[in-house]
Length: 375
Image (tube, rainbow, N blue to C red; front, side):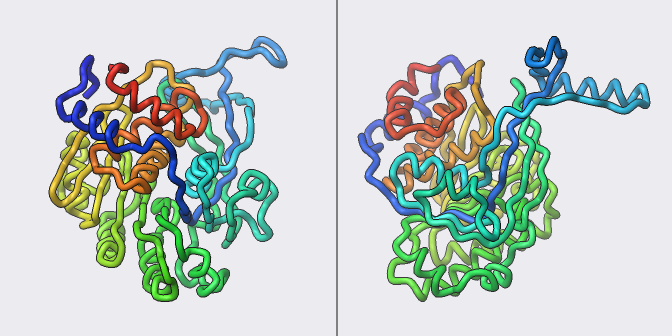
């Protein structure tokens, strides 16, 4: 859906965001769970010229060719890589990092080590951390045309309501959640019991709070390998949650297609069609599907598609989806309409892929203000 000029629908969404997005961040208090990952950021090497000099293997398609050639030759394949750095990752880390930068109050419930590992304590010293297990590890390789993530599962994979309450006091957890504006959770593909866990969390702790979170934000992650029956079962819990507190689900195209497919939708359909089908499967308040070229929002009464200003030279694409979600949550804190919410999500992701860093609020606003001119 890339175009030289924005559609009328996109134009209207940009105008709505320009009117509705506050000039300054008004603050917020958010809770995130239930993962925690340590990422090793790596670069694959094409040709080495010396101890510190080499040509980068810049395209994922080049790695694919090497794999194909190796298979055809019936030989082993060796690919050298260099580690560029270490960072924390996962749903809770990416979003808490971004919101802490804005000065928001964040609670993180996840797998940060028992006791909490120093890398999490140092980076998130301004957040409240509650750890329920050991972190996972991921080797993340950026290419110009994609990314490769080699993950070692954390204890988040085994997390369910029984385990959570075995490691955290329910009343203490309720006290930490009380007064938060939004509860954000991810990822379903990592924590298979996530929808049921969140349902039990709300059933058990909401009555103990004076002012429980008013919204739930749910990121399924890469659920393409989950059986259809498991997705249907999870959808039933999300529907139950939505009867208590409004739920927004945000997913990329492949995740959206996986949800849509459980009701027979063609996974190769365009994002707008699959987003509508996914919304019908989940029966939540809002479903948002996001891609590098268009993002779609669906509610009971609307289906809105907003084009994305693309760049041919992204600095980083890994966790672009998390930063899209960051923008959506900014919009939800401010009470923006659905079209304006999607533009804000696109803007936050747009800043991130161009800079490689969580955007400031000013940078998001600047992107919105120049959004139309980027086509």
